[in-house]
Image (tube, rainbow, N blue to C red):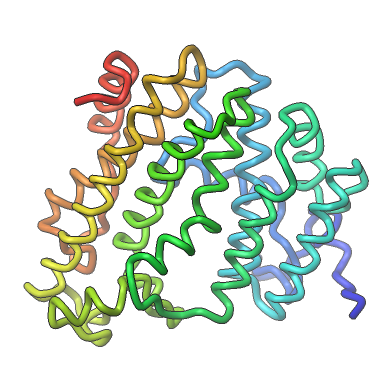
Length: 302
């Protein structure tokens, strides 16, 4: 099938209706995607990093967000958009990409030697989101995280020239933990899209029903389940935190920021009594910076 997209999908120009909403099949403009960085839980490009590193991290972030948009938010045929993204990702490796954010990614994948097989996993994860709406076990959820989250950390390690097998293993633990925390934050929003990332067997163990995700506040049972998942994510995060100690310089600064965001998010859940329905659980800025400094100094230990 040949996919034909509006000009704005390729140029990144003003391809919007008068009401500001993208047309079916469009991608959002680059500036709109990158602006989302300010609202993300976990820092992707600290201002203290050198401009070249920030450029690479911005390019990666733009690609990640664009793929998420195609799989989660885009009107129209999302599968076709994901197919188009995969084609243009291949073009990026030959410096012939058509989408502006893939054009911006081209020098990053070349200079940082990021394998295509790493980045295409993000597209595969969003394809999986189109057909898989529930995960029976935590193991199944972690298999999904291996596509949706772990490639992010591996790509970042490539940016810093430290994509070594032992470090990638630690990074995978951190990224999976961050993904599980995000799923716990977004249980209501995900359910509105008919997606439940809380493992089915865990929901049954705690006596929770999917209808519980529609309430204005979490039941005692649901709070218990969220606490269980957050604690499990926290343990994974700490199992991966020694990654910080294996890095130095700007790599240490950046990766410490990701782990700090995870720690601060887990603390925010505790402060909210593990009720993400009543409270918009977000990491506190000062707690994040405190954890960031602690991680940088201690290298991933408490």
